[in-house]
Image (cartoon, rainbow, N blue to C red; front, top):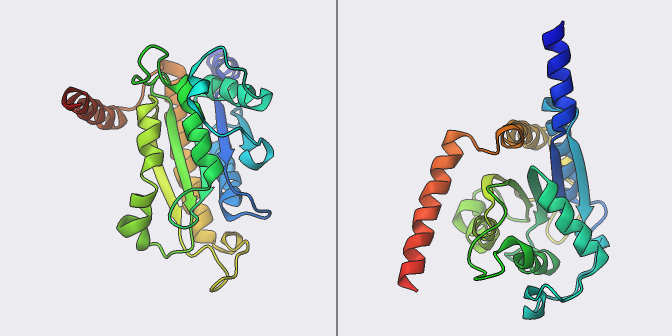
Length: 241
């Protein structure tokens, strides 16, 4: 009984925090729908998890310029709040559509703006996110086989930026053919139980990684190995530039 109460108390004190950034401009939205299913998967593993979702369409941000690397530059209250939430989060999910072979412009702008706090102030070359795990959800109009052949390549700046900022890529999910027909854009993934189940399963695995990260400040060994290889690659690139 004491052990059970101790475990419950530990879960409450830990209070894992997960931030979801939803980049779609549409309502209803396929990528936003899947982000909600991911949240459900997380809750299956960690009912006490504190999940916050921010829809980027609700926080218009000024376009990035180098002035934002100056700490004296004032920022929008909404951006300051997003920065606070990202720093406090133990894990981050980004859900986005793929339009014309890339993510929406406002998400790319956010990635640029994150450099103001995601990189060290002295050199802007060292990530500051401390290994925080990220899970990316993409939806697009092309079928699944197009992901490794083309779509993943055109959106590769997303995971590369996350790693550069010091985050860790947990996994990526791509949902293809997110249209009702040629030129017909509407919610369709709600009718795809296999896709919903797949997102939830990945989110459950993500929740376990985030729990470990929240408890220990560390990542599973398999993820550490991937990050070590990336760090070696970064050091080589820096020596060459």
